[in-house]
Image 1 (cartoon, rainbow, N blue to C red):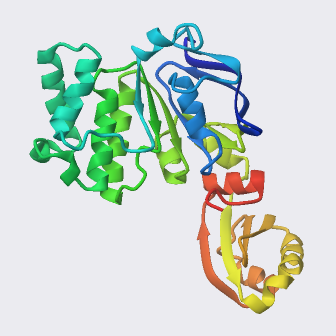
Image 2 (image 1 turned 45 degrees about the horizontal axis):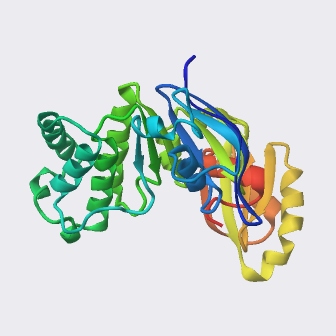
Length: 314
């Protein structure tokens, strides 16, 4: 198994703040690997180090076998980066922005012109390709940024929150585009706090919080840690919020309930087998009015909640 990315106790501090805390990664070539975690967890800082933008405080890393500290110049030839913040030359058209990046990478003019047309079409931008990007919507700018990261056909691509701010239709276009790249045996490291995005795209992922990796595995493996069954979430009236510990204690006495937790300011979440059929037993145990009831299967957010006691967006 050849590794595209390898880190050993990689750490980054900003003063007394430890943004990334000695993380170890082994990402094989051709994998679509996810970094799932809340804002401020250390995802962007990790990508900034691996893409040679930020120097590590300690530890080391290798990209395609190249030493991050000693061979940064060589690494830059093989990677593409789509940053979280949109970076475009607003006085240029979409086509000109992409051509500029291609030229910076020394691509042959004929090659990059043909490739630009192909990429613009895949991202549904061909009709507006000669408009100045300052006239674009935020979602269109985001899609151009994605294309700028891949025009030179890098071996490793870093996508930092690639679908942030996109409407559902544009998000799906970007997801399909990223999947196509992964089919070409390109290695992709994707950061996100979108559970659906991580579940839909990633072969494998880590969950990161406060700079530390707290879980690692395939999306289905991580969800299976919580077991089979249904997840029910509901809200209690404000006057009953102090009773949540008592409610949870009663719920845990039901033989089909695996776990139950408080979440947010007035909600309870629980997991159990065949919960929908046995909802009347749950209501009897709760003994107070249940509001905003939802029932679903385990999600990656439930995994994060189980590990940390809070939601990804809390």
